[in-house]
Amino acid sequence: MLSVENITVCYGQMKALQGVSLEISQGDMVALIGANGSGKSTLMNVISGMIQAVSGEIIWEGRPLKGLSPDNICQAGIIQVPEGRKLFPGMTVEENIIMGAYHPNVRRQAPESLQKVFSTFPRLADRRRQFAGSLSGGEQQMVALGRALMAKPRLLMLDEPSLGLAPKAAAEIFMIIKELNKEGMTILLVSQEVLETLSITTYGYVLENGIMALKGPSRELRENPKVKTSYLGL
Amino acid sequence: MDAVLIIQSLISGIMMGMVYALLGVGFSLTWGVMHVIHISHAAFGLIGAYLSYSLLQYCGVDPVVSAAVSVPLLFITACGLYQLLIRPITRAQNIVMASMILTFGLAIILENIMALIWKADPRVLTPTYSSGALIAGPFYFQYPHLVGFGLSVLGITAIYLFLKKTYTGMAVRAAWQQPEAAQLYGVNLYRISMITFALAVSTAGAGGISLALLNSFEPHSHNLWLIYLFLVVIVGGVGNVIGTALAGLIIGVITGLSMAFLPFQWVNLVTFGLLMIFLIFRPHGLIKQEGM
Image (cartoon, rainbow over all chains, first blue to last red; front, side, top):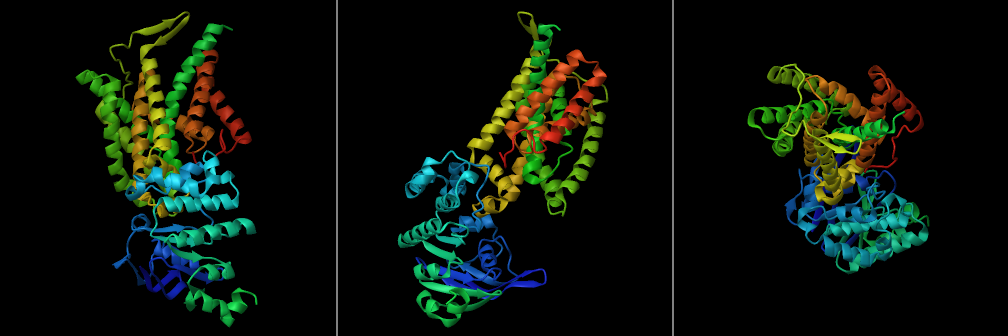
């Protein structure tokens, strides 16, 4: 469905990504793990069109994405939930979620989608008129997920969805992600909760200093001695 | 002091203030959304005023009717202007400074074009109802003032509903509060910037027509209007429509009352003195709010 081939990204002189490749098939949930600054968010932003790669290619459903702007990539069905959620602080919960259906392709279904989001996250329905900034971290992440679901993603990319959340809220978010994948959503999950991430995904990639250091089925990665010492603290 | 005079000047102040608010809203939006400080904003308002003047003078079209033509016309012109002048400078390191210098130049050009076409004499809009007035007990309201006030209320309400109720309006707010996320959800920042700029310029036109119904104007009047725009936007909070409307009203009332009771040369001193005091205590504006 998505194949990232040999992507290199530079920030000035520094190479943020160097010949990185990644493959996602329909219905998969793929993990992308790595330390801070290893290039995970950069890779997501290249796929979303926010950052231009120096070389390499991204093929989405058989078509190259190169040169497309973020709004076109959104239209193509690749939706990112950015790190830190990036909600619209001066908008209400409902307005934030509705903004997810901004693209004309999905706008017509917005009322039904909104009902669906509110039935998935009933707590948000109670707070629909509150400003997004006034919610707790876990609720804000739900708003971010709800906003993404409004866009009818065919590939959902989640960047650190549990970062800064209380353990209970983080567990809840992971449950929801698992549920979405079970319903058939293709997901690319970036997280520093390595054990949790590798236990709900089928395949994983490990980025180290902009290089894809490891890849393999998540189960095998969990047993990999290098992953164990570097990321699981075992 | 005379109660009738106080109330009369209070109401005149509110009328004037609403017009300032309509002029200020667009100025505030371009500032907030695009980081463009549009110095020629008031000059476009003046173009709106002159267009209605000519249409009234030579074709006998009422200013409110001609607004329906000149406001969309300004919208289209502004779209072109955005592509030609504004979009290139949004790549500058310091957009605020670059935009101020660019639009300051534009304001001078526009002022001189207006002086060339309409001459430098002061003009007044004199629609058919200009000599009429509404008399309610001891109070007295000239019809043109009421129409100008109505036009500005209409303009502000339209912008508010646009920003609150339409997808494009929401995208304007989204682009300003969180541009990165807005892009990820399909907002094309260039398109939204163009719409914001064009909307601002066309509301300036409507504001200019309203103001022309209340006051006389000449090609350099926009300089004075601009000072009031800054005042309204600083007090209201950049990009805050409700705040801007409120600030417009407050400033209108202050100038209205001080015009009634102070010698003319003291009015600006009082207004701007109050601004300084206001800035010391509420540097972020009347309503502290991220985005609108």
